[in-house]
Amino acid sequence: MKTHSVHVCKECGTTSPRWAGRCAGCGEWNTLEEGNAHRVARPVRAVAAPLRGVQTSEGTLRSSGIDELDRVLGGGFTPGSTTLLFGEPGVGKSTLALMALRQRALEGEAVLLIAAEESAAQVATRARRLGEIPPNLLLCATMNVEDAEDLIRLLKPVLCVVDSIAAMSDPSLPSLAGSVPQVRHGAERLCAAAKFVGASLVLVGHVTKDGELAGPRTLEHLVDTVLRIEGDRDGSLRILRALKHRFGATSEVGLLEMAGAGLRDLPEASLALPDDLEVSGVAMGVATDGSRSLLVEIQALVATGSGAARRVAHQLSSQRLSLLLAVLEVRCGIDTSTSDVLAASAGGLPALEPGVDVALALAIASAARGFAIAREVVCVGEVGLAGELRSVAGLSRRVREAQRLGARAVIVPVAGELDEVAGLRISRCRTLGEAIEVAQRHEVVKVR
Ligand code: TYD
Ligand code: MG
Image (tube, rainbow, N blue to C red; front, side, top):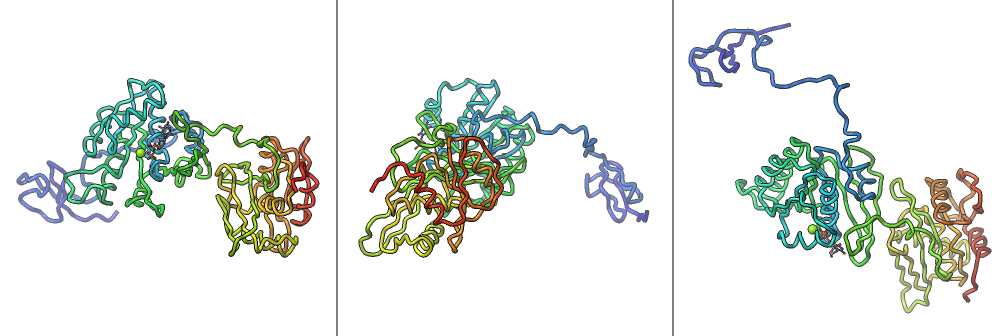
């Protein structure tokens, strides 16, 4: 090894390229001695340990008590990790975070809520709606990063929620509270403290109207997990997604319902086939969202237009709607060019991908021609410009899910692997025209 001569302080180990009377590191006099660079003596603080002996986080995940949240997290919160939970105002961030805190506290663990936006009384009002408040759920209403950090280090909570990170600031910094440097600095300090004591940290964030994380998009790379909670303010459905997840897949989707006592896992029953009165303009489809298949009820209304024909797509893709209307007109002779066409995924479940084309097209055909399709018929497939039915990703998974929730017959494209399932009639259709005929044969009530 090539070495070169250096001077090393025998007191503190500071090196210097040439001799000096006084060490620049510790200020002692006459402590520099000549030595070789590779022999520089300095106390070693870093530790290396055999990787095979390192504990994994498996089995140490902390359940939030909310199945749908755990599903998105891949089982629960990882110790020492930081999760950013963001969404629009009023969507239920504080409620979800508080429910997770309450669950861990009910399990007998110490948990901490840093309330930076609301008063203690406001937090207590929300908490009372959720039920009994365990004594080990601690609250500190502060906006001061240092105070929050001290509490995390002192109390070593298993779970700590900071609501919200945007409101936290360090008064010793020159920048304004809520500014990007403040929020970043706050998040960094709190993450470090949480990691040090092994706490799972949840930072609540805001989004502005355009969907950007208010100010700190920069927080995303700093945290381990980014969760977004979305939903219609008027509806009760809430959808939880992982946009980043260092500990697992980001394809899981959580479905929750805002109820009188907090958020709850969306009951499977509400996704099952509705047994309402059969009417025209309704077709059942299966949409996929991440790794999840969701049974969706597609509704369409074709009404005499007054003036310019309107097209409205709610929780459906308006591009797919336009394309399907053109295909219906040109390939199937169902002309809606002078009518208003309103289409929606009932219940607000998003069905934006092409796999629901057949269901949407059949709902429109059913509305335009006035026949009702039996609810136990579920339609899966994409529609091409030639009017052909095309296979879609996860076809067999979608069909299995439909059957599990009560489907008795499916309308699917000719292509695409499907397992034979007992009790399920599979109608393979080449074109949308064929699918309409089959759907009409499944007709239950003549409406018009
Ligand atoms: P909140 O968690 O405060 O939303 P965020 O922190 O995202 O702004 O909850 C907002 C709404 O949820 C509020 O309008 C009241 C409603 N809510 C319920 O319907 N049920 C409940 O049990 C709770 C706690 C809130
Ligand atoms: Mg809130």
